[in-house]
Image: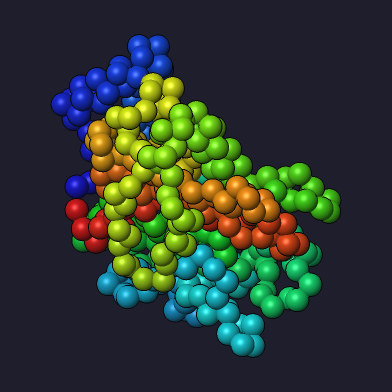
Length: 360
């Protein structure tokens, strides 16, 4: 199923769901949601991506093409990592063409491709995450890992615009954005992982700068809104496992947590705000497709689960939101580069059985 489709039956169903949240709130959210979809339908993301990918590919010399361009059926397309990848001699082992090896013009073309796969906020967050590599370089004393804002890699799989399928990836430490298309139609925009270390800079010239703050603060607000009985239903026994990576293995759809139907209208609103932290990184038409899966889950299949170790420094926290065809994962369990506890976010948007458009 293509991501950018819509129909009147779904609109009726969706509006009914929003109305159930209360008339004023329902109308506000419904109008915003459909406004995004309508405006983006005039300027869909797929053709922009194809144009940007072609421009980037055409700017490369033969050696650069050998690094950046791969067949659509390459096993590399479904390998993904958001950790540093380097060998014992500190040479990068991540595939793709890294920005360090590009001309200034090619870097601009690479960033133009990234822009087609993100909203304005998503692009700003990606650039801020990249800038944290310079912060880490200053903070870390061991210098075990290379920290370089230009160690971000671009890969194009297949021929941009090919109706049989093509894709692209922008990836480096703490970012992986994977997009799959058929022709000009976006059919998958996951796995999508945005992380931050430090989540809040505690020293130096940029002290106080926060990256991805809403992913934690909005979830904390939701947790605080829950009654004790609701918290017992939502709370996981242990901190949740790290985000899967490195291959196309689909994440399991969780079956724990508090159900959507057990929340009041305000809590449902707060849960939507949490989800928007993830979907709001996407272009409007791609986000609208994800929200179709969200609205299809406004029953017992939509769940929120969390775990907090309140007795430990920094109060490490994890949570997830799961529904029909989507999974949000958040972990704040690691210290930052200076040892500040729980100041290191990993956030992911996945599509169980659907990452990389491997299944409908």
